[in-house]
Length: 445
Image 1 (spheres, rainbow, N blue to C red):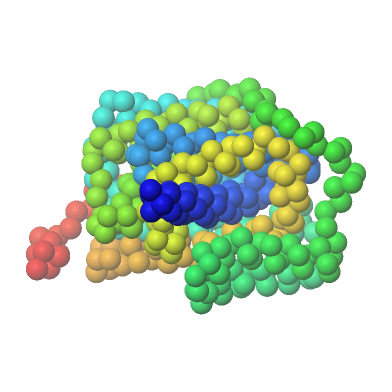
Image 2: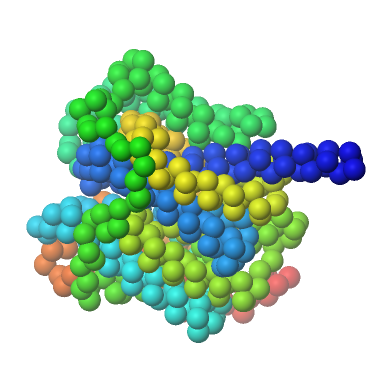
């Protein structure tokens, strides 16, 4: 009897500690992007706090739904990097075309709903696994590389304080941002145990503390005190603005996001079971619920979430392989979202610090992209495909959005996004330009 009681207490304490660790990981992965988007769309403190509240709520709900009904693995659902890219590009292109930030956000809501519909259809009609043949490691690596290149500009501008409005760089804020960046990098690569596990969170806390001491914290006193308890607001950006121009963008984004499901499921299954594995049913369920979670994200006016492959790194680091604590942590994040004072406090993180911590997390992502591209020999064919795609895709990232105003909006949303154009070029060129018989023989040798 006593032994059973001891085992129960031990198990309870173990689940509690694992739940707390998962909660911190979910929080650290969700906290920075709302601040980044707030900077890009010039949201005020109250609007950023509202976006933060809705993001916590949606991350918790979507992670729980996927873990219980979708792919059924402990994989965090977090703001998608590709959507951050699309948000950033359209913040510039749509405003340059004469739209307000609010109208742009409503157009983005429509794009996310269409993407969710496509993902749901892929899953329901069991089509998800049938398009995955195009997402070879070569293509996935090129996508990850282009993603980090495009987003690095956004994060670096945030670190320098020159997002949207070009102004003089504040040297003191920039220095603190880079100190935060290198602290997160240092802890991620050289830290041991919990120091490495919580590198992003520790970097944000240290950078925020130095910022408050040396520069001063964000003045929350000028903002109305948040109520103690509040439900996340529906359609905070207004109702979606549907137009045909976003449908091609939504379809291509949906197809690209399918590869994200595979990458996450394979990585986490390897961390849990020791070998990468997935079933077609699992991918189709994951696609269906990714479609559902896209609609949920849109209803609560947040950036759509996707399964984050970084969850496998957390599992490897902590050794936590049980799904139960992950589900509890997801629900705990939902509960925290109901208390605006807590969310408002977290929202006061300075934008340069948040951008610095987020940029640091993309170092490993770029490394993953490079290693995927080099998994097979970079022969003349593959190098040519990469060079063409990167030259066009990265080149488009440097072209001002206003130059595309003269073309139809249905094309404008695609060609003004270097990430999408570059990724599509890699896919199309690799499928049309087949490996020569000699190259295939060397590959199979």
